[in-house]
Image 1 (cartoon, rainbow, N blue to C red):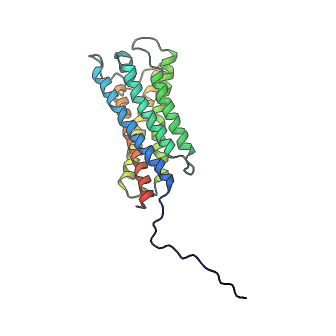
Image 2 (cartoon, rainbow, N blue to C red):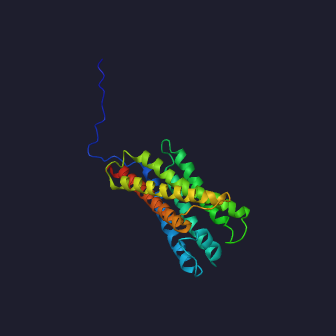
Image 3 (cartoon, rainbow, N blue to C red):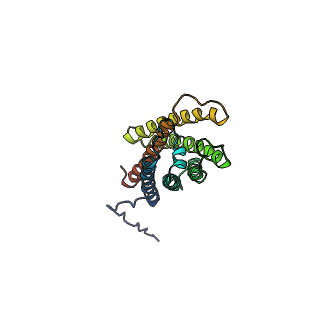
Length: 235
């Protein structure tokens, strides 16, 4: 007895469904961009509202915060927006292979941002306090962690962004941000242990490093957005 086997005809022309996993990174990238954008106006207002006579080159942002009437809430909005951006990027990496290290660093960066706002520094000319010590340590983590994240993400995405402008910009902003953050931290170490600070103007250096952090956060979110969209469209 002969048995015939019927095979189901192949469906021609039906497009493959896009992977659902890319929806979360797209949303996360937009959230990170929104959080970073929200962090800029408060820090600008902080400088506009600062008391006359403060030197932006010599006076740190932390001192602006404690000497400006609305300095602490304005600074909290800035750090909160950046913390949201960090958590959003970490969330967007959920489910990715070997992303745990980057996610932990992003979470630590967000915590350090919140701690820097929750524990303000001491007013100029007054003795240091527990709050100012926590603020100093949190600030060091804020400036050290994001360039590290940028480097790890560039290495992770290097093949996907090879030859693309976003890959070059990600690497460049990571290097610049890392160099400025390193200079800022090294410049602060002597003063933290009771020695004379180095000759680099702390206010100017901190503002340059802070601006580099904001730009790097934008670039990281933009890279995530482009890669997630490319995964959907196949281009």
